Image (cartoon, rainbow, N blue to C red; front, side, top):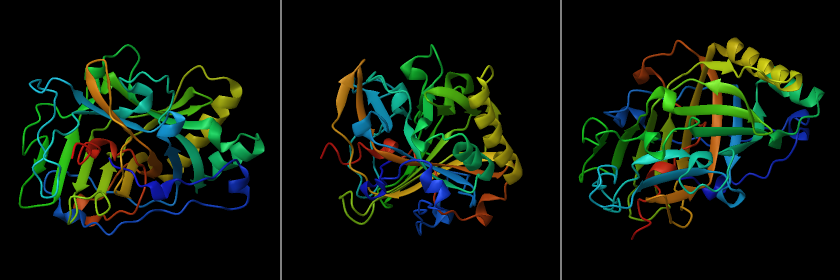
Length: 317
């Protein structure tokens, strides 16, 4: 998922909530009815937590592939119109699980709250700053880098879809559910665990080979949220407030990103992988667990975790 530099929002502490300041949703006009492989669609919500992960602050998204060009986890060659023609990233995680092993503990930091009234009030009433809340996704404890979300057998028509006649590419990154995790943290302590979902990636390479006219989207399915056991009283109350808001919205959480072209950070090599990091705006949306058919829903913004899966697109040109 390639992230836009225009989303480098400088928002600070809880005063943003008390003043009624909300981060703008970055909407896009992409027509999801064009998709043939990906079944999910963004779901609108008035309850969203907006995060931003800056790779300069050791956050963001990491995508990677095997340095060995003959390896099965090298990633397929991008064939879509205006793509780079190079290998696609085979794996994707938050920087907290990158093979770079930078010591990152989260992928992004909370910068804005829309809705989520119980959660927002708990933050204000307990003088908890926004930047103490993080979002992470990646490998569960003790799991190998090769167990991250990945392209599986990397088969055209099953794991990804693209064509030289179209500037669109669709990808589905999957993992064993117990090998990966998506979570909300408080001062680097997990407080909320979100259920497993594949990562559904939409890449529109635009009308030219340049990054500027690209569009990327990242979607998850609607998943449940549960509280991390054994929390201290302050963290436990924060988690309960989050879960109350999710329950009021219908019991589910969806991650979505819609973003214009992003330029990746410098490519790195570590642990046998080529790695790229990108800054990412991320959003978690509280939605109903029972969702409409994909053809009946159009989306606006939300999570971002994407620019990740396309960062190699033109980086090797």
